[in-house]
Image (cartoon, rainbow, N blue to C red; front, side, top):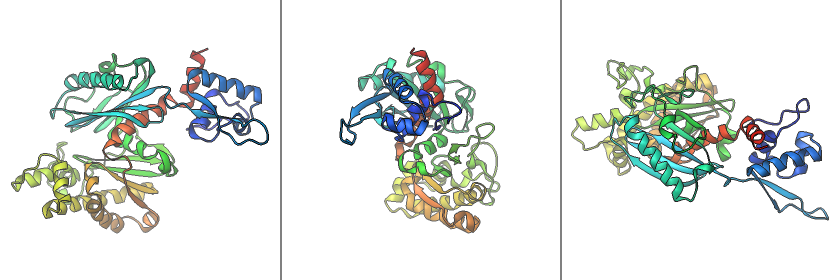
Length: 395
Protein backbone atom coordinates (compact mmCIF):
# COMPACT_ATOMS: atom_id res chain seq x y z
CA UNK A 1 0.00 0.00 0.00
CA UNK A 2 1.41 3.36 -0.99
CA UNK A 3 1.87 6.10 1.57
CA UNK A 4 0.95 9.73 0.87
CA UNK A 5 3.18 11.47 -1.65
CA UNK A 6 4.62 14.06 0.76
CA UNK A 7 4.84 17.84 0.75
CA UNK A 8 6.04 18.23 -2.85
CA UNK A 9 2.92 16.55 -4.20
CA UNK A 10 -0.32 16.95 -2.20
CA UNK A 11 -2.00 13.77 -1.00
CA UNK A 12 -4.85 12.67 -3.25
CA UNK A 13 -8.14 11.02 -2.40
CA UNK A 14 -6.47 7.68 -3.15
CA UNK A 15 -3.71 8.43 -0.66
CA UNK A 16 -6.25 9.34 2.01
CA UNK A 17 -8.25 6.20 1.28
CA UNK A 18 -5.05 4.16 1.75
CA UNK A 19 -4.59 5.71 5.20
CA UNK A 20 -8.18 4.95 6.18
CA UNK A 21 -8.13 1.44 4.71
CA UNK A 22 -4.95 0.55 6.62
CA UNK A 23 -6.24 2.06 9.88
CA UNK A 24 -3.42 4.64 10.02
CA UNK A 25 -5.98 7.45 10.13
CA UNK A 26 -9.55 7.40 11.43
CA UNK A 27 -10.33 11.12 11.77
CA UNK A 28 -9.97 14.20 9.57
CA UNK A 29 -7.51 15.65 12.08
CA UNK A 30 -5.26 12.58 11.84
CA UNK A 31 -5.40 12.77 8.04
CA UNK A 32 -4.38 16.42 8.16
CA UNK A 33 -1.49 15.68 10.52
CA UNK A 34 -0.21 12.83 8.32
CA UNK A 35 -0.60 14.55 4.95
CA UNK A 36 -0.11 18.23 5.75
CA UNK A 37 -3.32 19.09 3.92
CA UNK A 38 -5.52 21.94 5.12
CA UNK A 39 -8.81 21.20 6.84
CA UNK A 40 -10.68 22.33 3.73
CA UNK A 41 -8.63 20.05 1.45
CA UNK A 42 -9.08 17.09 3.79
CA UNK A 43 -12.84 17.69 3.99
CA UNK A 44 -13.14 17.86 0.20
CA UNK A 45 -11.22 14.62 -0.36
CA UNK A 46 -13.09 12.78 2.36
CA UNK A 47 -16.40 13.96 0.86
CA UNK A 48 -15.49 12.44 -2.52
CA UNK A 49 -14.55 9.15 -0.85
CA UNK A 50 -17.87 9.11 1.00
CA UNK A 51 -19.71 9.81 -2.24
CA UNK A 52 -17.94 6.85 -3.85
CA UNK A 53 -19.18 4.59 -1.05
CA UNK A 54 -15.66 3.52 -0.05
CA UNK A 55 -15.61 5.47 3.21
CA UNK A 56 -18.26 5.72 5.87
CA UNK A 57 -18.50 7.90 8.99
CA UNK A 58 -19.67 7.29 12.52
CA UNK A 59 -19.37 9.03 15.89
CA UNK A 60 -17.30 7.05 18.34
CA UNK A 61 -14.25 9.18 19.02
CA UNK A 62 -13.08 10.30 22.45
CA UNK A 63 -14.45 13.68 23.45
CA UNK A 64 -11.99 16.40 24.49
CA UNK A 65 -14.70 18.52 26.04
CA UNK A 66 -17.05 19.05 23.12
CA UNK A 67 -18.69 16.85 20.51
CA UNK A 68 -16.74 13.57 19.95
CA UNK A 69 -14.80 13.63 16.65
CA UNK A 70 -16.39 11.76 13.76
CA UNK A 71 -14.57 8.53 12.96
CA UNK A 72 -13.90 7.44 9.38
CA UNK A 73 -13.83 3.82 8.29
CA UNK A 74 -13.36 1.76 5.16
CA UNK A 75 -16.81 0.62 4.03
CA UNK A 76 -16.02 -3.04 3.38
CA UNK A 77 -19.58 -3.85 2.28
CA UNK A 78 -19.60 -1.20 -0.46
CA UNK A 79 -19.09 -4.00 -2.97
CA UNK A 80 -17.84 -7.54 -3.43
CA UNK A 81 -14.96 -9.28 -5.12
CA UNK A 82 -15.29 -12.74 -6.67
CA UNK A 83 -12.51 -15.31 -6.62
CA UNK A 84 -11.75 -18.69 -8.14
CA UNK A 85 -8.88 -21.04 -7.28
CA UNK A 86 -8.66 -23.43 -10.21
CA UNK A 87 -7.04 -26.79 -9.52
CA UNK A 88 -6.53 -30.02 -11.39
CA UNK A 89 -9.61 -31.79 -10.02
CA UNK A 90 -11.38 -29.09 -7.98
CA UNK A 91 -12.11 -25.39 -8.35
CA UNK A 92 -12.97 -23.34 -5.28
CA UNK A 93 -15.16 -20.24 -5.64
CA UNK A 94 -15.90 -17.41 -3.23
CA UNK A 95 -17.66 -14.11 -2.80
CA UNK A 96 -15.69 -11.79 -0.51
CA UNK A 97 -16.25 -8.30 0.89
CA UNK A 98 -13.84 -5.46 0.16
CA UNK A 99 -11.67 -6.45 3.12
CA UNK A 100 -11.17 -9.84 1.47
CA UNK A 101 -13.21 -11.70 4.08
CA UNK A 102 -15.30 -14.56 2.72
CA UNK A 103 -19.07 -14.15 2.53
CA UNK A 104 -19.87 -17.40 0.67
CA UNK A 105 -17.95 -20.29 -0.87
CA UNK A 106 -18.60 -23.24 -3.16
CA UNK A 107 -16.52 -26.08 -4.60
CA UNK A 108 -16.78 -27.30 -8.19
CA UNK A 109 -15.54 -30.84 -8.80
CA UNK A 110 -14.27 -31.36 -12.33
CA UNK A 111 -12.86 -34.08 -14.52
CA UNK A 112 -9.06 -34.18 -14.55
CA UNK A 113 -7.98 -32.71 -17.87
CA UNK A 114 -11.03 -30.47 -18.32
CA UNK A 115 -10.26 -27.68 -20.80
CA UNK A 116 -11.00 -23.98 -20.26
CA UNK A 117 -13.89 -24.26 -22.72
CA UNK A 118 -15.38 -27.03 -20.58
CA UNK A 119 -14.71 -25.63 -17.10
CA UNK A 120 -14.80 -21.83 -17.34
CA UNK A 121 -18.47 -21.46 -18.44
CA UNK A 122 -19.39 -23.52 -15.37
CA UNK A 123 -17.20 -21.31 -13.17
CA UNK A 124 -18.81 -18.18 -14.62
CA UNK A 125 -22.35 -19.42 -14.01
CA UNK A 126 -21.58 -20.63 -10.48
CA UNK A 127 -20.00 -17.28 -9.60
CA UNK A 128 -23.14 -15.48 -10.78
CA UNK A 129 -25.33 -17.82 -8.72
CA UNK A 130 -23.10 -17.55 -5.66
CA UNK A 131 -23.17 -13.76 -5.87
CA UNK A 132 -26.95 -13.68 -6.27
CA UNK A 133 -27.29 -16.08 -3.37
CA UNK A 134 -25.82 -13.50 -0.98
CA UNK A 135 -28.00 -10.74 -2.39
CA UNK A 136 -25.36 -8.97 -4.47
CA UNK A 137 -25.61 -7.71 -8.05
CA UNK A 138 -23.14 -7.36 -10.90
CA UNK A 139 -23.09 -3.59 -10.36
CA UNK A 140 -21.42 -4.06 -6.96
CA UNK A 141 -18.69 -6.43 -8.21
CA UNK A 142 -15.37 -4.58 -8.16
CA UNK A 143 -13.21 -7.36 -9.59
CA UNK A 144 -12.44 -11.06 -9.98
CA UNK A 145 -9.28 -12.85 -8.89
CA UNK A 146 -8.32 -16.22 -10.37
CA UNK A 147 -5.43 -18.52 -9.50
CA UNK A 148 -3.98 -21.32 -11.63
CA UNK A 149 -1.27 -23.94 -11.09
CA UNK A 150 1.97 -23.32 -12.95
CA UNK A 151 3.46 -20.23 -14.56
CA UNK A 152 0.93 -17.52 -15.47
CA UNK A 153 1.06 -14.66 -17.97
CA UNK A 154 -0.53 -11.96 -15.82
CA UNK A 155 -0.72 -9.46 -18.69
CA UNK A 156 -2.77 -11.77 -20.92
CA UNK A 157 -4.58 -13.43 -18.03
CA UNK A 158 -3.74 -17.00 -18.99
CA UNK A 159 -1.62 -20.01 -18.13
CA UNK A 160 1.86 -19.80 -19.63
CA UNK A 161 3.29 -23.17 -18.70
CA UNK A 162 1.44 -25.71 -16.56
CA UNK A 163 2.20 -29.44 -16.68
CA UNK A 164 -0.93 -30.00 -14.60
CA UNK A 165 -3.42 -28.17 -16.81
CA UNK A 166 -3.18 -29.55 -20.33
CA UNK A 167 -4.85 -27.30 -22.91
CA UNK A 168 -4.84 -24.16 -20.73
CA UNK A 169 -1.58 -22.59 -21.88
CA UNK A 170 -2.12 -19.42 -23.88
CA UNK A 171 -5.93 -19.35 -23.42
CA UNK A 172 -7.07 -15.98 -21.92
CA UNK A 173 -9.73 -16.44 -19.24
CA UNK A 174 -11.28 -12.96 -19.41
CA UNK A 175 -13.69 -13.74 -22.29
CA UNK A 176 -15.28 -16.58 -20.32
CA UNK A 177 -16.24 -14.14 -17.56
CA UNK A 178 -17.67 -11.34 -19.71
CA UNK A 179 -21.21 -12.06 -18.52
CA UNK A 180 -20.18 -12.05 -14.87
CA UNK A 181 -18.80 -8.50 -14.72
CA UNK A 182 -17.01 -5.83 -16.69
CA UNK A 183 -14.80 -5.12 -13.66
CA UNK A 184 -11.05 -5.96 -13.77
CA UNK A 185 -10.09 -9.65 -13.84
CA UNK A 186 -6.70 -10.64 -12.38
CA UNK A 187 -5.01 -14.02 -12.94
CA UNK A 188 -1.90 -15.35 -11.21
CA UNK A 189 -0.14 -18.48 -10.02
CA UNK A 190 -1.67 -20.38 -7.08
CA UNK A 191 1.36 -20.10 -4.77
CA UNK A 192 1.63 -16.38 -5.51
CA UNK A 193 -1.93 -15.67 -4.37
CA UNK A 194 -1.48 -17.92 -1.34
CA UNK A 195 1.48 -15.86 -0.14
CA UNK A 196 -0.64 -12.72 -0.61
CA UNK A 197 -3.29 -14.31 1.63
CA UNK A 198 -0.64 -14.87 4.30
CA UNK A 199 0.29 -11.18 4.34
CA UNK A 200 -3.10 -10.19 5.70
CA UNK A 201 -3.57 -9.30 9.35
CA UNK A 202 -0.76 -9.97 11.83
CA UNK A 203 1.55 -11.51 9.24
CA UNK A 204 1.75 -8.27 7.26
CA UNK A 205 4.75 -7.48 9.47
CA UNK A 206 6.78 -10.06 7.56
CA UNK A 207 8.33 -8.18 4.64
CA UNK A 208 10.39 -11.19 3.54
CA UNK A 209 8.30 -14.33 3.27
CA UNK A 210 8.58 -17.63 1.43
CA UNK A 211 5.51 -19.84 1.08
CA UNK A 212 5.82 -23.48 0.06
CA UNK A 213 2.78 -25.11 -1.51
CA UNK A 214 3.10 -28.86 -1.11
CA UNK A 215 0.19 -30.53 -2.86
CA UNK A 216 -0.14 -32.59 -6.03
CA UNK A 217 2.71 -30.42 -7.27
CA UNK A 218 5.26 -28.24 -5.52
CA UNK A 219 5.55 -24.47 -5.81
CA UNK A 220 6.56 -21.37 -3.89
CA UNK A 221 5.37 -17.81 -3.44
CA UNK A 222 8.06 -15.22 -2.75
CA UNK A 223 7.67 -11.84 -1.02
CA UNK A 224 10.84 -9.78 -0.73
CA UNK A 225 10.92 -6.30 0.74
CA UNK A 226 7.15 -6.42 1.06
CA UNK A 227 6.65 -6.98 -2.68
CA UNK A 228 5.48 -10.15 -4.43
CA UNK A 229 8.23 -11.39 -6.73
CA UNK A 230 7.03 -12.94 -9.99
CA UNK A 231 10.27 -12.92 -11.97
CA UNK A 232 10.86 -11.90 -15.59
CA UNK A 233 8.37 -14.40 -17.06
CA UNK A 234 6.27 -15.12 -13.98
CA UNK A 235 8.24 -18.27 -13.20
CA UNK A 236 9.61 -17.21 -9.80
CA UNK A 237 8.92 -19.92 -7.24
CA UNK A 238 8.71 -22.89 -9.64
CA UNK A 239 10.82 -25.01 -7.28
CA UNK A 240 9.07 -28.27 -8.14
CA UNK A 241 11.29 -28.76 -11.16
CA UNK A 242 14.61 -28.13 -9.45
CA UNK A 243 16.95 -31.08 -10.04
CA UNK A 244 18.08 -33.14 -7.05
CA UNK A 245 20.26 -36.23 -6.74
CA UNK A 246 17.50 -38.34 -5.16
CA UNK A 247 15.40 -37.98 -8.33
CA UNK A 248 18.23 -38.73 -10.75
CA UNK A 249 16.96 -40.76 -13.70
CA UNK A 250 13.30 -40.38 -12.65
CA UNK A 251 10.88 -38.89 -15.17
CA UNK A 252 8.77 -35.98 -13.98
CA UNK A 253 5.29 -35.25 -15.28
CA UNK A 254 6.77 -32.14 -16.94
CA UNK A 255 8.68 -34.50 -19.25
CA UNK A 256 12.10 -33.72 -17.81
CA UNK A 257 14.20 -35.98 -15.61
CA UNK A 258 15.44 -35.51 -12.05
CA UNK A 259 12.89 -32.97 -10.72
CA UNK A 260 12.22 -32.86 -7.00
CA UNK A 261 8.52 -33.34 -7.80
CA UNK A 262 9.32 -36.78 -9.17
CA UNK A 263 10.06 -37.95 -5.61
CA UNK A 264 8.38 -35.38 -3.37
CA UNK A 265 5.28 -34.17 -5.21
CA UNK A 266 1.88 -35.45 -4.16
CA UNK A 267 1.34 -37.14 -7.50
CA UNK A 268 4.61 -39.10 -7.08
CA UNK A 269 3.65 -40.23 -3.57
CA UNK A 270 0.24 -41.39 -4.82
CA UNK A 271 1.88 -43.30 -7.67
CA UNK A 272 4.30 -45.02 -5.30
CA UNK A 273 1.50 -46.18 -3.01
CA UNK A 274 -0.59 -47.33 -5.94
CA UNK A 275 2.36 -49.44 -7.13
CA UNK A 276 2.28 -51.07 -3.69
CA UNK A 277 -1.37 -51.94 -4.23
CA UNK A 278 -2.78 -49.22 -1.97
CA UNK A 279 -6.12 -47.66 -2.93
CA UNK A 280 -5.33 -43.97 -3.10
CA UNK A 281 -6.34 -41.54 -5.85
CA UNK A 282 -5.17 -38.17 -4.55
CA UNK A 283 -2.61 -36.81 -2.10
CA UNK A 284 -5.53 -35.97 0.21
CA UNK A 285 -6.13 -39.74 0.51
CA UNK A 286 -2.50 -40.21 1.56
CA UNK A 287 -2.80 -37.43 4.13
CA UNK A 288 -5.87 -39.11 5.60
CA UNK A 289 -3.89 -42.34 5.95
CA UNK A 290 -0.97 -40.50 7.57
CA UNK A 291 -3.24 -38.78 10.07
CA UNK A 292 -4.77 -42.16 10.89
CA UNK A 293 -1.30 -43.49 11.73
CA UNK A 294 -0.43 -45.41 8.56
CA UNK A 295 3.33 -46.01 8.72
CA UNK A 296 3.97 -46.00 4.95
CA UNK A 297 2.02 -42.78 4.41
CA UNK A 298 3.76 -41.04 7.30
CA UNK A 299 7.19 -42.17 6.08
CA UNK A 300 6.50 -40.86 2.57
CA UNK A 301 5.22 -37.50 3.80
CA UNK A 302 8.28 -37.06 6.02
CA UNK A 303 10.60 -38.03 3.17
CA UNK A 304 8.81 -35.53 0.93
CA UNK A 305 9.54 -32.88 3.57
CA UNK A 306 13.24 -33.81 3.50
CA UNK A 307 13.42 -33.38 -0.28
CA UNK A 308 11.51 -30.11 -0.18
CA UNK A 309 13.85 -28.86 2.56
CA UNK A 310 16.83 -29.76 0.40
CA UNK A 311 15.62 -27.48 -2.38
CA UNK A 312 14.33 -24.88 0.04
CA UNK A 313 17.75 -24.50 1.65
CA UNK A 314 19.09 -22.86 -1.51
CA UNK A 315 16.14 -20.46 -1.61
CA UNK A 316 16.67 -19.56 2.05
CA UNK A 317 20.36 -18.86 1.39
CA UNK A 318 19.46 -16.71 -1.60
CA UNK A 319 16.51 -14.77 -0.16
CA UNK A 320 17.06 -14.85 3.62
CA UNK A 321 13.32 -14.77 4.47
CA UNK A 322 12.02 -14.01 7.93
CA UNK A 323 9.46 -16.80 7.71
CA UNK A 324 8.66 -19.90 5.70
CA UNK A 325 4.96 -20.69 5.44
CA UNK A 326 3.99 -24.30 4.74
CA UNK A 327 0.72 -24.74 2.85
CA UNK A 328 -1.05 -27.02 0.40
CA UNK A 329 -2.73 -30.38 0.90
CA UNK A 330 0.33 -31.90 2.60
CA UNK A 331 0.22 -29.15 5.23
CA UNK A 332 -2.70 -31.05 6.78
CA UNK A 333 0.03 -33.42 8.05
CA UNK A 334 2.10 -30.42 9.10
CA UNK A 335 4.09 -31.97 11.95
CA UNK A 336 5.19 -34.96 9.87
CA UNK A 337 6.03 -32.92 6.78
CA UNK A 338 7.90 -30.19 8.65
CA UNK A 339 9.87 -32.69 10.72
CA UNK A 340 11.46 -33.87 7.47
CA UNK A 341 11.76 -30.38 6.04
CA UNK A 342 13.65 -29.09 9.06
CA UNK A 343 16.21 -31.90 8.84
CA UNK A 344 17.55 -30.90 5.44
CA UNK A 345 16.76 -27.19 5.53
CA UNK A 346 18.75 -26.56 8.70
CA UNK A 347 21.38 -29.06 7.68
CA UNK A 348 22.09 -27.49 4.28
CA UNK A 349 21.30 -23.77 4.64
CA UNK A 350 23.87 -21.39 6.10
CA UNK A 351 23.42 -20.77 9.81
CA UNK A 352 23.05 -16.99 9.53
CA UNK A 353 20.03 -17.43 7.23
CA UNK A 354 18.28 -19.83 9.60
CA UNK A 355 19.17 -18.54 13.07
CA UNK A 356 16.01 -16.40 13.28
CA UNK A 357 13.95 -18.14 10.59
CA UNK A 358 10.41 -19.06 11.58
CA UNK A 359 8.50 -21.96 10.00
CA UNK A 360 4.73 -21.61 10.33
CA UNK A 361 1.59 -23.31 8.94
CA UNK A 362 -0.66 -21.48 6.51
CA UNK A 363 -3.35 -19.27 8.04
CA UNK A 364 -6.37 -19.91 5.83
CA UNK A 365 -6.05 -23.62 5.17
CA UNK A 366 -7.97 -24.92 2.16
CA UNK A 367 -9.47 -21.47 1.62
CA UNK A 368 -6.05 -19.93 1.05
CA UNK A 369 -6.47 -19.94 -2.74
CA UNK A 370 -9.74 -18.02 -2.81
CA UNK A 371 -8.68 -15.63 -0.04
CA UNK A 372 -5.45 -14.93 -1.90
CA UNK A 373 -7.19 -14.51 -5.25
CA UNK A 374 -9.56 -11.99 -3.69
CA UNK A 375 -6.62 -10.20 -2.04
CA UNK A 376 -4.84 -9.96 -5.39
CA UNK A 377 -7.89 -8.39 -7.06
CA UNK A 378 -8.47 -5.98 -4.19
CA UNK A 379 -4.85 -4.83 -4.12
CA UNK A 380 -5.36 -3.83 -7.75
CA UNK A 381 -8.81 -2.22 -7.69
CA UNK A 382 -8.26 -0.46 -4.34
CA UNK A 383 -4.75 0.80 -5.07
CA UNK A 384 -4.05 4.52 -4.75
CA UNK A 385 -4.04 5.03 -8.51
CA UNK A 386 -7.20 2.98 -9.07
CA UNK A 387 -9.11 4.90 -6.40
CA UNK A 388 -7.91 8.23 -7.80
CA UNK A 389 -9.18 7.19 -11.22
CA UNK A 390 -12.52 6.15 -9.74
CA UNK A 391 -12.91 9.52 -8.00
CA UNK A 392 -12.18 11.36 -11.26
CA UNK A 393 -14.78 9.27 -13.11
CA UNK A 394 -17.51 9.99 -10.59
CA UNK A 395 -17.17 13.78 -10.87
